[in-house]
Image (cartoon, rainbow, N blue to C red; front, side):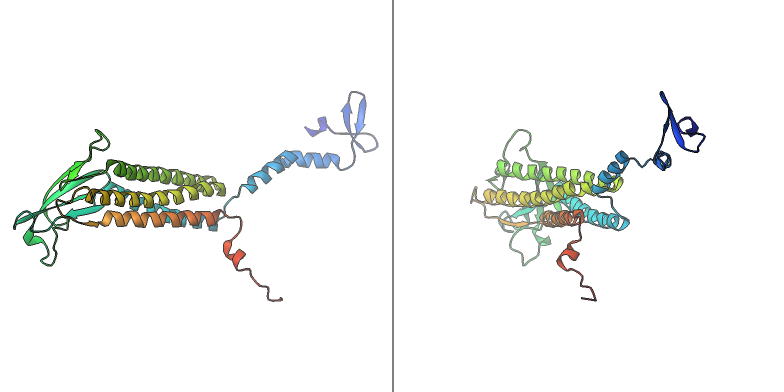
Length: 282
């Protein structure tokens, strides 16, 4: 096939047939041209490979570190979903003897719904002054808040909730979950395409989601304080429950996971940068 383009004249020189006759080709040019055509190492291909390499392909060690950091972030996501989906954010309880000597009423609620529970006084710890905790067996009645449908405030123990604060806490939690999903998509793309560039937006998503989760917790606590100060007819004892613990741990874990992705996205090792290795000769 190559004989169509390169022929040899009577003196042994390589020439190219043209319109004006045979055009001589410099020595080594035909071999270099054939080599470049056969291997595909053209100038355009080389630039393309350099551009691809500059985006940062990962090694097996980097892939393992990314998977470990992703596992940390997934733990934060699971804790967030567990906390957001449950209604044990805060427990409200009057005195054990406020209603009668046999039963007492306690309440607990979260972002979406609240529950009231009737407990037997005999089941409560004698050293405890208020009714509760809500984990004790009793008759429970749970209803979703009307914040998101009719816009009505909820009334518990003659106290009225502040719907604006409750809605703000719920919206912050939902937006943080959306950022977690976006971060997970970025990490999945980084692992499938083996490109470190996706670690940067993933770190931003996880760090911001952790901050929003903690901010949602702060706003919810302010809504609880506003509920307690709305009416002082019924003295209540309030305490944050285990759902809040899940949310607090989730926010911290998500921020740590995002920082790990930032460190993995750096073009150099921060440990080698901060602690340079001294040669034995020096």
